[in-house]
Image 1 (cartoon, rainbow over the protein chains, first blue to last red):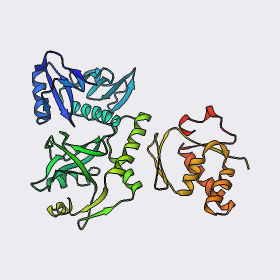
Image 2: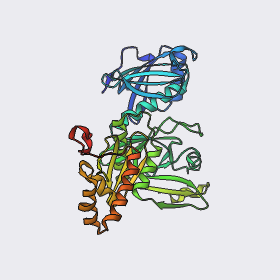
Image 3: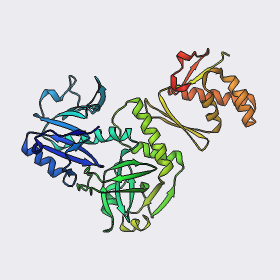
Image 4: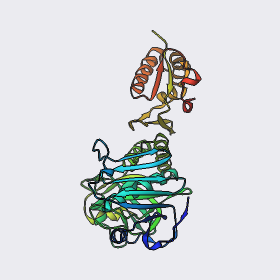
Length: 276
Length: 104
């Protein structure tokens, strides 16, 4: 689904992650600048977009953002044929047929950041890709992912990256299916490094599951453990049975095409000597 | 003892990999890796074949194992997976309409 932006292009910012432009339109100039700064490097000039969101800013305390129970937990579901995304600081609707949606949110970058992550994860799920808790980098034209839960070492390995490595993200990696291979793309979704990744992509060469240890070594994993570990780290927000099945099949396909290894590492630069 | 009939739930995702069946519950993401014997029971769980027949016709036949021992193992396996809602168990054959489409 591709839509053409309406005429007031100066109100619109096209955020292009993984080669997928998503247009967001706001009439608030300061919020527009905030978005442009936050997603610097990922703001495109494309006049066509995969999705088109109108942003309606409101006060954080406004009742429209809080449900009857005062619940601010993230909820993602299909309601009346549209995706409904809501949390304490935003409420968004998105029609996947028309490619249009609305976001009602406070003037916070975290709300739109969360909406973008969810939307990309839902779109990618149908295309055989996914977002995953992983740092990623390109070296010699090949992309490597370093996956793990919080504290596993994603930021550490990113910080230790040598000058010839291009950092795609230190927190959330973007993995797209491309025929019989997978491609890793840069994302603006930063972790502790608080640094937006480079907007570049490269064929994925391997994924390493991080584990801190006393020496640097790469260990094989059996296929079922590899799939389980990857599944555990894939970002998935909707408990839609059909999508869960898709993600499961995607993880199996991924494991059949991309080497998945355990990387035990000491937190110093020498770990990158074995990444190639 | 009453006969058992087993069928695969539709609320799962599964994939055969190197002779082992991986099964994930959609409800709670519980993950199971079934060994070769369990995978044979899983694949035979059509809701219409009695478990005892699966044991004799598939397990004892293909794995050269004692019937009593095979039945005990099959019962344990069925109990565990049914507790997670991954296998449906009944004391009578499940009709086509009672078996989820995906399990047929």
